Image 1 (cartoon, one colour):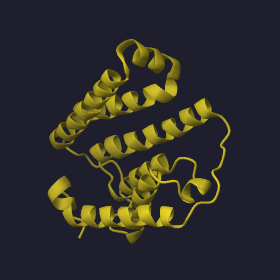
Image 2 (spheres, rainbow, N blue to C red):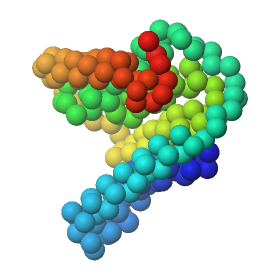
Image 3 (cartoon, helix red, strand yellow):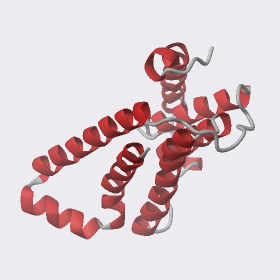
Length: 186
């Protein structure tokens, strides 16, 4: 379990570094160069994902609570909405007029959905950890960027594209969930 938690903490710390210490990040980037900094960041993220996967597989799950929505279609709706929001962050659509941080909000919905459908210790560590990270990221980015300046209206296609991509990703994850993560959904 400690390996899983260490991976989530490493992932979170690497991502929060920019939002929590923008001045320090800029100085590090200036000293070593933009590309070497990005390379190091990528290695840390990949390393944290490897640690998370190894930690997940090696952790023995212990029941902590009864999952209130295990098997509920609401969980699927939350994951689908999370994926659409995650991809919406890459497009200048109208979704960004209503949700300041679609990627982090999508991550939060994904985490909450999994916490509602899994009551074991490793799920709490992974999905709870990512949910806490997403919330911290939102708070720190808001602090760094100040008041929200909502973007103007956009063409509807910029909302349809993440809807299609998110739905396709949802279908793929639904179909391959057992092969990828060892848990059958359908």
